[in-house]
Each structure stands twice: as structure tokens, then as C-alpha cells.
Image (tube, rainbow, N blue to C red):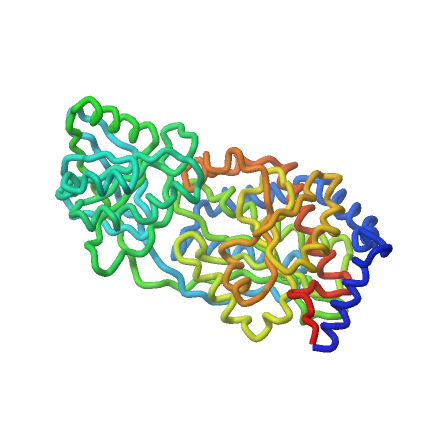
Length: 460
């Protein structure tokens, strides 16, 4: 406690009137420049990302694709010369999509493109044939409650923000089932569509309502069905889904380190999630974030930089449909969390970085903002409030300061959870800038003499 108080007081001395400003950044300007230059020197990271996603494809929890990808990553990390390379066992949900189809039968026949939603149950073998009712909100569903019974409910809700619109994917089946609906279709959660459905996880079914199947349809088909209903027509749809949930399966969090030279027990964690949905390649969400974090640590080692504290790259499993990896990491390292100095997550795509969002004490924020000045040359030095991520959420709730990489996300939800999430959507130079941004921040926090403070020291 005394040692921590001394470190905190030393930091506060830097903030007193007349003290040097930007002292941390000034101390690391030369090394930050080296890191940024090295990160942009070639396209190694992009090549590694392409090999990963081209070789193993989508990596849904419980799948052979995921486990084969993890085996390959562990071998490559060992070949990179990283320390303590290993997998930490995690039991993960094992949902299987199965064969699926949807067809508009009336007022005309048309195949509808769908993707079943994660955790959904399947239909009977012959499917569900029923009239369709289209609603634009939960409020409209309640207002038309009498029309939902015995029908398939379609939520035709335009994208406003992910947090707002994803509610219909998450709870749509539950709310419709309460009113007697047989199944649910959800307009894909995306602001832009080229007839591509977008999947994603539902919330767990409520125990006191029937479990009904749920799938996403394209924006175009949702709007078509809306127009038909508005004209007084009565669409009829047949939905078939072979979805099922198998017993939990073994998987792993991937862990590798650059050992600290003086304080190896103190750790800066950074990473992304290695699982993805079972469509596309999961290149953007989140193989890119994994490779960026991995490459940041490999690059530091290649440059011969040995920070005082350990930098640990973690590629979490099962972010998409369970968050088992994040919880398992917390539980496995619970006794060490007081010495987790900072956790950094990259799970927003590896587009052009702008900086980070940060959650922590005011004193820590001042230090982070100082360090971020080193990223101004690549326009990645903005620190916003309330940063973090789903996988580091469990250790953040245990007190670890957290931050998430912020990137230019104009097109992120165009491809999110769809067959369009492929390597060609990413740019090698932007990936390199993400590597540089992660590497500089992680290195300086791991190396600076003072420990990143969690809370201001209270007066006794």
C-alpha cells in the first residue's frame, strides 16, 4: 500500500503547476518513432491475417475450424519466439446452424435469403408455413398483439445505431413468443445492404415462454414484405431451419507474452477474439484485431524492446455467442488481477485508428492522454471516455483499467456478421497503423517507471 501511494504521489507531482507537461511522452518520443516506422515498413501483418482467414475460414465456437486455427496460431507464436505460448482451456457453447431456407409463397413465390440467429432453435423437419405480420417496433408488436398468434413476425426496423437496433435481434423471438407467434424474422442489423443477411446472437430464451426459431433476412426482402403488407396483401412464408445446440465443447484462449525485464509479474494485456460467426471469414470481426495485437507484441520483440512489465497478448475464444473466454480468463488469473496494469481490446475492425476509449481513474487518464501524444503523427492520439470491450469486461469489473481501440467505422456494419466479412475489405496500411497504435500504447504503459494508478490515493 505504501509503495503504491509513493508511486501515485510521484505521478501527481508531475501535474502540479510549473511541473513539466507531457513528461511521459517526451521520455518515449524516440522509441515511439521507431515503433511507428517499423510497423509501416512492410505488409507482414496483412499477409499473416490473409493466411489465417484464407486457410481456416469462419471460426464459430465449437467448430473444427476454430480449433485448427488456434493450433496454427500457437505454432506461429512459438516460431516468433514469444514467451509462455499456450492455450488456456475454456468450455464453449456449440450451436450448429444446419440447413436453412425461407420462401415467400404468397402473393408470389420468391426465395428469401436468411441466416439463422445464434442460439435459435430449429423448425420442425417440414418447416413452419404461416402468414406474416410485419412490425416496425416492439410497441407496434404490442399494439397488434392479436395478429401475432399463429403467425411469423417480421421486425422491419431500420438501422439507427447498433446498440438501439440490435435489440430486435436479441429479444425479438422472446417478445413475439409471448404473444403466440410461431417464428421470427429480423431485418438485418446493418445500415447498408447488397442483399446480404447478417447473423448474430439472440439473448438466451426466457424459461417461461416458448422457444421459437429466429432468422435474419436481408434489408431488401424486409422492405419488400413491408410494401406488400402496406398494399393490403397477405404474405405467407415457409421457414425451415436445422439449428440446434449441442453440448458445450472444449476450446482455448490463446496466450503469449513478451516478458518484463524488471517487473514480469505486472502485466499489460491486449488482444481480440479469435472466434467468429460461421459465415464469411471473420477477417474484420475479429481476426484483424487478433493479428494486430499479436503483431504489436512480435514487433516489439523484433525491435529488441524489453519493457519493465510483461506484455501479454490474449486471443479470447467465444466472444460472439457466449463470452466464455473472457470469464474463463478472469477466473484463471483472479489472483493476479491486482497486477494487471491495463487491458486493451481491439474488436471494432482494423480500419484507420483514431485512438482509444479509456475507462479508469482520472490520474490514469491523464497519463494515458500524455502517452497518446506520441500517436499524433499517425492521427491516432484521441482518448475518449468509456472504453473497453466485451472480452476484457470481466476483468475490468474486477478493477482493471480498460481501453478499446477506436477506428474509423463508417463501413464496419456493412460487413458485420455476414458473408461479406472477408479479407479484401481491409487495407494493409490501415492494419499497420492499428499495429503501431497498439504497440506504442502497450509498450509505454508496460515500461514507464510509474505504475498506472487505478484510483486516486485517499487522504487518511
